[in-house]
Length: 67
Image 1 (cartoon, rainbow, N blue to C red):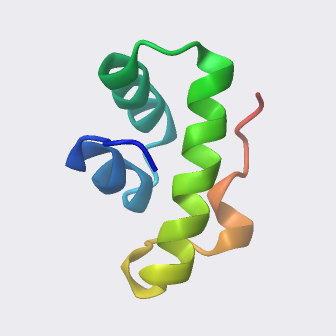
Image 2 (cartoon, one colour):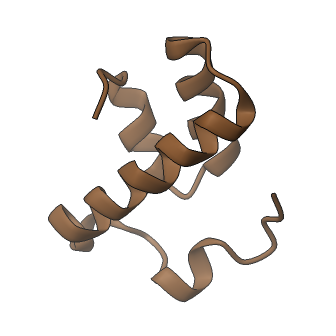
């Protein structure tokens, strides 16, 4: 995974999807589509490595988010 600011993990864990995507884009200058790909990879890594740090379940996480 590329060097992401620590705020990305914090936003992902706090269920702040838009803020996480913005932080990814600000840090890397990538497109929104690329930021979504980075987000998805980092989300899965965090779910695997830090499952107890999430505030919502996997099922609830993406509810009402349409990309």
